[in-house]
Length: 189
Image 1 (tube, one colour):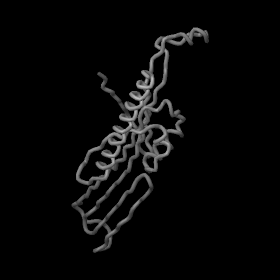
Image 2 (cartoon, helix red, strand yellow):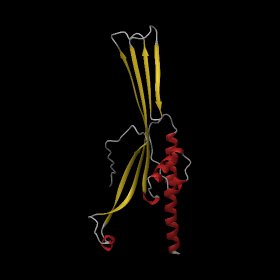
Image 3 (cartoon, one colour):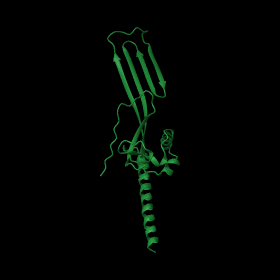
Image 4 (tube, helix red, strand yellow):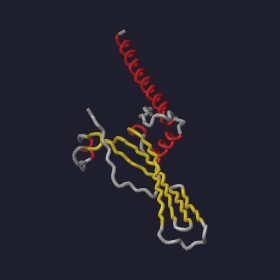
């Protein structure tokens, strides 16, 4: 009787935790599609929910995780950041440009990774606009490593003390953007 009661209590706690995660995800989706709020919330998904999600960003995160050969049991968190750099500038020249009077030249250089708009207008205006999209995928995974340098003997390595290390990998999809430095901090109690 006591073992049955312990089973029901543990099952109740597990289901209560799953319910709390589901409520959190519902609130995160509500906030995601609310145009008046400019905040993000963290989603809490199990590996099965991650693998079978129909959200396009979650599917892309899962695809990038699999491309980098990170196992299901080692995944700690997945993040996606999308941003655009836009620069528009106009130059007024003191001299007249050597083009036909009343002429206006517009051209654009486009690629999936950048857009450059160039405008030249008579008599003295030169303007340029640059737009560069950025997509970052951040994958955190757990690995077990030895505390001291690994021993040469296989049996000695088995009994060596180990700790869990979180590896964070930032993948930038835009080939024209390179990351200089990243730092990730988890605050623990």
